[in-house]
Length: 389
Image (tube, rainbow, N blue to C red):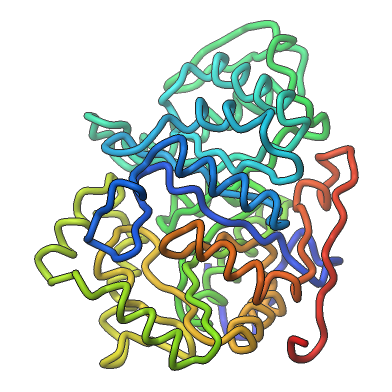
């Protein structure tokens, strides 16, 4: 579908002037003080990763992404279940790799976890290859499409009655009923291929983007809005991005340089290429953005692409002082972005810095509550006007 700079962006949550602010749990061995220099205290462990989630909960973040990877890290569903009785207000954005678990059993596991969390569950749908397999893109997205349809039948119908390319079932759906009765947990999805965009437009609630220039983000949002409208739907938009906030812009830039001090080109490429998504279209777009950056790695105001030299996936950060970063976030909100998944290195320390210097000045909401999925009240923090005080 063709878009122009004037093509409107249709979003589900038009009525809110804030956004859901989330953090990131590095359960896939993605935590360090310096990229490429591993210390045992930052490894993927229950102790380290759970402490980050619990701290984010206490600091007022509304959601936290629990990613999925085979090569390194911990099992996502098991990790989420362990956190359920320990957390109070934060939702768990739990990554689901489509096809990894038999769909009816997955529906039951999700329903169990949703009841344990009393509705504080959201799902990140992933369509990449399963470890050790190499399914073509069309089949992978078809499998994901079928998994989502089965989950939605399980959550909302009396029976799972499905006959597709990968799955065929006729089962009683009663064992799979979640705590969230208005359609089940919200589905977040990130992907850049045509098939991925179609999948999100047809079935998902939040389209997650990686950092790009304002113009590229707007174009992606316009394209997704048109695709969703073609299915009689609208979606919300999210941005997964790193952040480095310091007292002054010069100190923030210095921290960015320090983060990369151990990275040589060959070492960075080795780290990037180990991920299952290393050859995806989204990763390619991050590389293209990095190639357009200036000598210090900035592709536009405050958007620093240096992190992508040493990791696959989300490869850029907002770098600046608190007022600058807050203004940039507010510009994203004005565009229509309603969900942010931030992170920084090391994650526990940066979670606290962002919560102290930026988070109190954003109207921070739960999208699950906005969409009527969570029946109990979660208060919003105020959105500051003008500069921070």
